[in-house]
Amino acid sequence: MGSRHSPLARVRDEDVLGVDPPYDYPDYVGTRLRHPKEPLVLLPHTLSERTAPVYGDMALGELDYDLTRQHAGEPLGERISVSGRVLGSDGRPLRGQLVEIWQANAAGRYRHSVDNHDAPLDPNFTGAGRCLTDANGEYRFVTMKPGAYPWGNHPNAWRPAHIHFSLFGQAIPDRLVTQMYFPGDPLFPFDPIFNSIRNDKARERLISTFELDLTEPEWSLGFRFDIVLGGRSATPLEEPHDD
Amino acid sequence: MTDPTLLPAPSQTSGPFLSIGLLRDHIGSSVVSDDDPRAIRIRGRLLDGNGEAVPDGMIEIWHANAAGRYAHPEDTRTDIPVEEGFLGFGRSGTVDDGWFEFVTVKPGRVPAPDGELQAPHVVVLVFARGLLKQLVTRLYFPDEPEANASDPVLSELDESERATLIAQAEDGGLRFDIHLQGDGETTFFAV
Image (cartoon, rainbow over all chains, first blue to last red; front, side, top):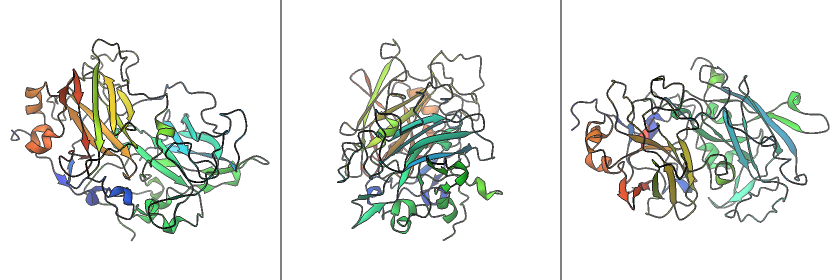
């Protein structure tokens, strides 16, 4: 076997990661037993990789985008909107993209059986939302600003406030699960997850911007978070590092 | 990268609470109906470098339909129909001691870039706390020895690598364990 086809290159994660963090990042203790130790096999793109699930027709609930109106009462905290555009690597807006988010409540507590942080749950907040991008690639959520919370990674470890995002893009390499942060968070220098992204400019891409234009008078603060998908394919040509 | 504003967004871990957002009712583990006569069951465990269960992960699968066509516009082989409602995508959590399970159909063969046919396979994505970005692998089928032997990906792997990608027949279904690290480490791809 093996003679008829092109040999598949073995590559080191650190040589192909582009803007992404590495699998092996010891400062984030959870990676230690969960990163592969063998090199990766560089996969030539076939139809299996040049495609991805298409959810543009998904029937969503009318209030799936509004995390503040999913229960009988209003959740506590600071009401915000988060909106932005989802773009391909060529700058083209991606329409009909399913955007899924989840987050802690304003007190920094997730509605999850594993979260034992001593902060109150909010009976009026689940912390999950989803929507589809429109013809201009725009999405919008209304939610409560999540709180920072402690985690056991190292002594006095706290995660900066963040909202988890999940997007599909147009092909398997586009698939993105990431986190959106808030501007000026004092916890940034201490957070190994945020700092696992080595490229300074790429890291800053995950910090939303406050925009007065998106802020609704007497109602909610507006944050913008644009997301470029694509252009993340593994390639042995490394993105320049700023560090 | 000519336009710095088009720098792609980097990945971050899904963390331990991904089920809140991703494992709800909207995308399930049944890619086809459980009573579809063609339905097959794929189950396995997600395991860490100590061989311990990873209970806070999520597995996603992506594959062509039984005739070998993807439900995606990039697959332009319109002579092969895609049945109404077939998306070819499923999600399963691993909360039950690392176990995941899917009900789906065995995909048909899809072309390789050189025009040859690939062996039937499923693209598998792995997310979990401790993974700063998803892992990508493939599941191949044990009842396809000839197609597997000529597959442009499988046939270029070492025997030990190949063994990690071929599911095993078990209880009328398929068993596919994913080892993130160490003994029997699953072969993962850079895409």
